[in-house]
Length: 243
Length: 323
Image 1 (cartoon, chains in turn blue, green):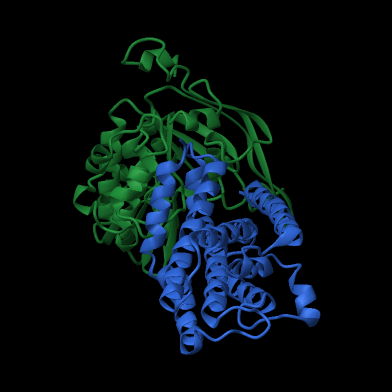
Image 2 (cartoon, each protein chain N blue to C red):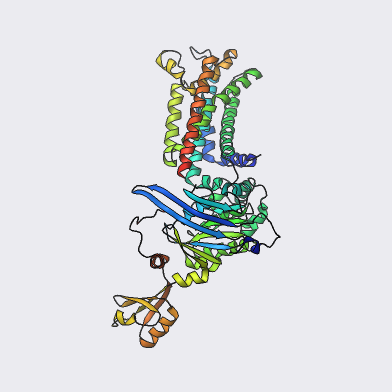
């Protein structure tokens, strides 16, 4: 019970924020149309996927990753504004607070996903309902490490550095994970598979045969979720011990 | 404070029995030059229904004490009891509302939405509309929180403190950022709410605020309580006034001998008299020196008064911390 209404207002606040609409929804959308529209039916060599499918999932992973990590910016802002202290003298539990933050992150991520799915469909991406669901499911699970990363970042850095840190991190992860161009062999291919964002992007392979991750993918995502959750818990304790 | 029951108006054995009690509270921080002993063993008992001012200069330990009372900070030693409960339990039961010293409002919500959001967290809150009405925010209710004036922001923060319908209201220097009109307005709203039988503790460094809004004042300096009593009594002890006048050609030492004057200084043509009884001093001054002009009488600074009450600042640590 604790925190349901709180979560609702959190979502309301987030969707009223113009910067969110611009960066989390608008940015991936614009890139998708710019890159994919001119040649949407062409197959990208080595992937078996059309431009439309490839970049729909790539930019969805980029946008959703951004949505989840931006939880960190909101936490950092609320810490700095003294709002976190105000909440600590209310019955809202720490657990409920983080649940609200993570659910809000997912709310943003799913909106970003939805607008890209719609755009993809308009450019000819056509999948059976089961595959849309499977793809969405993988992205939702693949975002778990980033939910934890958002909380970790939010308690580790201040509002001045959270923007550049997030922007830099997401750009590097997107590059190494094959968001902008296909990485099919070589060192980058071997290295990328250790990253959680790699598997987020790999969700696109659902479009090929319904399978995308395999054991390695699940283990990598689970390991990062565990590591980053432990990190988030540590950062939270360190932050509140100081008051 | 005899027992809490004397202050109870709504029958015996209500949930506010026992009042507030701080016993032997001690708290140190790590500072760059070794530990800073922010609170050095204080004992306070506040009966239910009392309005108490916590007075003291910056660094006296007021905010640290309040943070421990609210359960935001764990004491190094001593105990806190809020109506017979631990601070966390009292907070969870919605018995405590507080306005912390610093804190902005979160943005992208209207005033009504923000108040509703906080109300949703409590077991038995006051109605949102009632809260807005009490705080004079009904007309502002649809405005976004990041577009409010300073005075409106403080009233919203007050609304957030009282929306749980607390038995104990804690305010840490609530008017520090407000102008004169904003202050007057804020305290009038606060007094009206306190009149519902609430227990109130507020920190301030303005003796006038303590005098106008509290029954009792507790003076803190260097982490200790240096005086505790009715505000009128405290005011008499620390309420020294400064009388300033333009009066050339008179020796400061002869002014120091006037009735009610404790000390005199000269700054160019102006003389500054430190008065224990400014009424007697001004009469005597004008009688003896009718040419004195540009006369101003002002309340003395609390810092000066405290220095006198507490003696020299501790040699051991001259900087007792910011909170």
